[in-house]
Every structure is written in C-alpha cells, then in structure tokens.
Length: 623
Image (tube, rainbow, N blue to C red; front, side, top):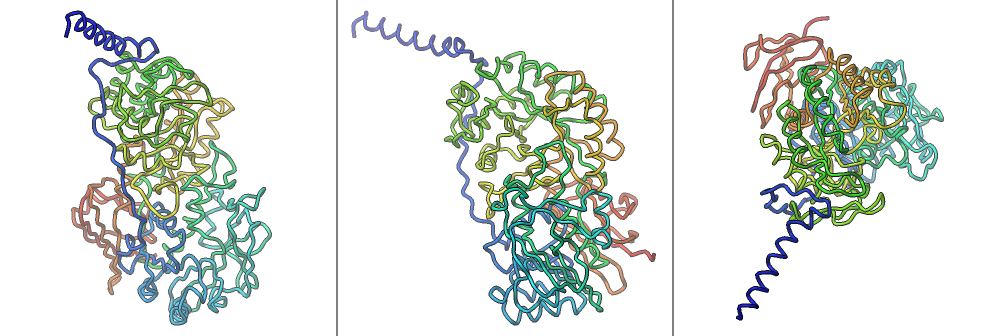
C-alpha cells in the first residue's frame, strides 16, 4: 500500500471518529464520558396462561371459588380477592368446595355447566349452615335457594344501589358507596350483559337503576345464607385492572369512584361474617388506615432543580417520595436537555436525601403507547429517540425507553435500583407489563384510580388481557396537579378523598410535578400534615415490596373444639408490619414469639417482622 493511501485511510478514520464525537453534540445530544450501556440483552419472556391450580392450595377456613368454567374471567376474582385480603382457593371439585363454609360459584350456575349431583349438593349447602354466593344463576333449578322466581338479561344496566339497611352493606352509606357505576349509561353496546332477578323472597341486597334486583339474599333457619349476583364480578374487575373501563369511569382523575372497592368489600364482609374464625389480611402496613405515596414527575428543565426543594421539605416532614425522572439527554420538540452533568448531580442529591429514583422514560413522548417493543439491545448513547412534534417521534421503542432510562439513573444514583416506572402523559400501552418485566422493573404507576375503578393497587396481566398474570403491580394515581382548578385551590377536595379512602384502608398516590414551587409546594406540605396521623408513608418501591410480598402470604385458620382459633401464616420473603383483621374481639393466648411484641387493638393484630411459618393462637372474648 502506498504511503499516500495510508495517509488517506488514517484521515478517513479520524474524520469518522471526530464525527462520532461532535455530530451528536451538534444535534443536541449530551454525551456522558465513559458511560455506555446497558450491555445485557433484555430477553423475551415466554408466558403460559395462568392455571387456576396456582390458587388451589389452602385449608377449609378459606373461601372456596367453585369454578364452573375455566373460559371465564376468574383471574380477575383471584387478583381482587388478594387485593382485599380474603384467603381463598379455586377448585373445580364441588365436593371439596362445599367442605368450606363460604362457597363462591363462578362464572355461572346452570344445568349445562354443573352436574345434577353437584347441583343437589350446592342446594344443600346453605341448608346446612353454609354461605353460598352464586354468579349469574341461570338454571339448574336453584332459583328458590337464592330467593327469586325469574331472571331477565339486559345490557342497559349502568348503576347499582345497595340496601342501606342490610348488615353487609350498611357501612356503604358512610363510605359514600351506596350507589356505584358498573356500566356505560350513554352507549349500552359497550356493556356486558347483566341479569335481573324478580319475584324475590326478601328485599334485594342491591338493585339496578330500574329497581330490579342485582343481588339477592336469603337467610336460612340453619344460619346459612345465599346470595345471587346478576353480574360478572371477575369481568368487571378486569375492566378496571386492564384499563378497559368502557365508559364506566365518571372522571379521569382527582375524584372518588370506588366501584371495585365496594364490590370487594361486600365479598369481604360476607366472608368475615361467615365464621368466628374468619381472619383477613390488612391492606396498609403497620395497621395504619391509608397507604400514602408521594410522587413527582420530573419532565421539565426547571423541575430537576426544584425537585431538591421538594425533597428537602419531605425529609423535614419525615416522609419519603418517589421521583419519576425523565432522562432527557437530547434536545427536541418537547424541551431542552436537562439530564446532563448538572442534572445527574441533582439525581444523586435526591438519592442522598432518601428519595426513590424511578424512571419517567427517555423521550416523554405522546406516542409512547404506539411504540414497538424493540429488540432488547437498545443502549446509551446509540439510543436516540427524537420527538419531532406532538404527533411524531422517531427512533423509539418501549424497551429502549425502559432500558436506557433505568441504566442512566442507576449510573447517577449508584446505590439505587430503579424498579418503578411511569410513562409520560400516562400513555399506557398493552405491551407495557411485558416490557417492564423484560427490563427489570417491578412496579408501575401508569394509570389513574378513577379509570381503574379502584383505590387499591393490583396485579397486571400480559397484554392487559384476562388469562396470564405477570409479576408487575400497578399503583394508580389518585390526585394529580395539572387539571384545573389550580392544585393549591383544591386541597379540601383532595383531603376529602383521602378521608374517604382511609375509612376502608385504601391507597392514595399523589402526583405533583415540581415545575414550580408556590401553591403546589404548599398543597403537598399541608396534605402531608393533614393525613400523617392516620397514614403510612413510603416510596412506591417500598410499598411495592411490601404489597407484592403480602400478595404471596398464605393465611389459614383452624377453629379448635375449645373455641381457640389457631392462625397460621407463611411468607417466603421477610415482611414487616403485616396486619391481621379480625371479625370478632379476641385476645392472644399463644404465639411463636413474645406476646408483648404482638400489637392487638381495634380488632386487628400488627405482626412483627417474620419469614417462613408464623403461628398464633387466639381466644374469642365474650361480648
């Protein structure tokens, strides 16, 4: 090779290297020296449909779900019952199911789905003192067992009102849950079919807006009870959990709509009043009334600096918050770069102040819900999504947004694992649960409580569908700061929502963009001080770890002949602050550890930290 040719080749190589260095900077990309990654590939995860047998284990003290068809929304029931703390099993064996005090037959009762022998045994269950809940009692000759003569189907039902006089639902008036919305009252074609029961033996437990019975009840001389639900509870639960409310939500955010909470409370109350041994899991750590998570979306140039002022205030108030930070290292249509060397130092300061560092994507694009999955190899600095306008973003993928933002934030906050995610503009794609799992996240806050129809967290499903669960949990937003009126002008409304949710142990997730201080700053500080006496505070990651561990806790009870109740819990992972809710007044007579460390008050027991099997014995107090 001639000397001149060598010089030309060397010159070309130098030009390429210089272009590689200067070109991204010229386009408005911040390059962190010596930072590149992640190197590992996000592998595709193969999922199989969840089998009902995953929920088959447990003692006869649990509620039994008698599954009459696997091709149903039973997974919604499973996730809902876990959320509200009801111990349960799911079985297709009617004999096993009927050995339990409380039996929930799902998704329907008919002669086509249930054998004559099983129908005869089901008929006998309340006669023998058991509690029987039937969903869509369409046939099988059991109408008299549930206290009605005939049934009609309709897609017009959009509201349900509970009987305020009944012991199971009288609390709903104080909780402002007497009437809930269960369907679309403008376009009925989006509604699932529901059934009305007529010719009732008793007054209905709940009625539709036309006065027809949505839920029947009948009391038996044996002490047994029967209830017929005229709607598919599992399907309704999944409508909320899968972000498919179909016009049921009355507000997008900043309001109180406990549709699913009311229905789960009804099942909970039914279970708790079925036996003196029925004990359930509390929904808030340490026996508190409200789980409160303060969150901030850092997605604006000034926000990253203001975030420090918010974090200092939160630390002074004795609480931790979660900061969802956009890793904006490119200048585009949305904004200038704010994750540069200075921005990275603010991330480190937030970590030093005890705050959770969480991801808010790279591009914060309005098209996030339309992004392709990606190949799982996206890495910084090669990954450069560019927002061209409100309607167009190029070079972006779900895995790129998740992988690269997580990598960079963990680089800046060296002692923090980034496990929580919230997309910009709450764009919520169907593929998000799988993308989160592939990228190493655990928790999502991508939905609002109103659109989810619940003020509780819940487990997500693959593709936001009905058959395959994923180990990702959603923590929906209760109140945010951007809708009018100004946040500082609606503190009373926010506090009223918090006070309602705390009456049944719900979750309050506050979203506050730190783009300004002023009225938003004052709102948050006053909110914290108001709810602090009854609220548990923690980051989304902390609450998520507690909630996901609680989700796997096994709870069984045994009622001895002498009236002693033995409670057995099992947790694969250490859990602290788990609360047992009691249906009666008890005293602790024996435990695996010193009784003085078990806090018993107001019909609940706050357990110490434990892992593995934990047993206590209780004696019921005479009223």
